[in-house]
Length: 499
Image (cartoon, rainbow, N blue to C red):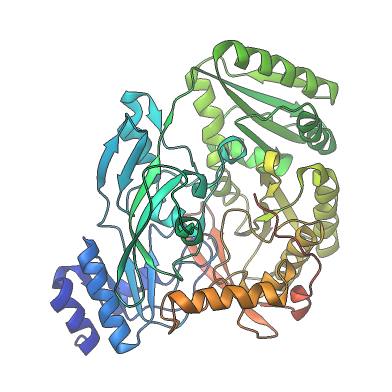
């Protein structure tokens, strides 16, 4: 087998060792953490902005699609090719280029692992705030593409709130710089426009982010409930009291029992739900807030409220939360994770609706979510070897996401749209909204070569959903096909709620 003319030209421009083209190598790039589609024609590993420029110029000349890729931990098919073409992997562009503690910023390449930046500035008492559950593996470039969130989004916001500027290679190979090392630069907010665009407008090659000083004190509480409704009412009451924790996470009984079996985090296996609540700031203020939070939890029938007394105990609780998805893979051959947003005041109603969906379709659904900002992650457990059950999973997922939109929420809070939900965009956007997005995309990506098939609906009545499933312990995966019914695309809401 011999390389194609396209591969040979890529090797000439960026080096033979930087290009993969054999089928056995390309198989590793057919999927992300949710979706699979098809193998790319080549995978390229640039080490500089100049390499990316060369790749884009060649792709533009040959009219070949280009898909950017970070660590492949995304959950919506963002870095998966829809039409073949070139995958540009930023795994070798992983340098922290500059750390400026005095001005609380850092400049990094897109392949820098999220957690590595916080570790690099920890000795100076700083950290990078966005913390997806996959932060030990996911890259900052991927976080920028998907506008990722995490447990501490409630207090500190998603990735877009922490990006000051970008270097971007456009579809024709031009290089632009957006934003600055300071806030409120005059002109259009191109940085905000690019963050969350999922690689459909350009390839990001440098990112300037803000750093935050570590808080003086942190308190982590675990509130334990015998009824799920009591936990959701606690969330609403905390909001009514004007309390904004740094993080407010919820897990139901199905999830926490799986987590405890897998991680030994210290979660009670006989409870219906737990709230993991964290407050941080000045020591005196944190102590006072923790006392008020405990009182609110007990007023809403929390049977017990525990406080992590040591950093080790706190880390153990968070280790359980951040490994929850993998833990559920131990109790089910497959699972399909959802990512919807609702107003947090409607959590009790939404969880009741999810339970009704589970009963109607004969499925087990575990719930884990960022309760403080209404970002839900129902995990539908199923057996991918059963075609009938696979169909029920797709129908159940359809109803859950449609309900989120109906409540005035969003079809995604942090996982992005990608291939998974592009046909669902009409649930929360009008035809005029979507037409304006198409016009903006066409101005930046006129030939549609950058990550085609993502974000915007194709206009088909039905779309193919490729469900990525976790087998056993989560170490191996496969995919099953489902069909999205056209009624999922009916307009049931007009607002695009943000996480």
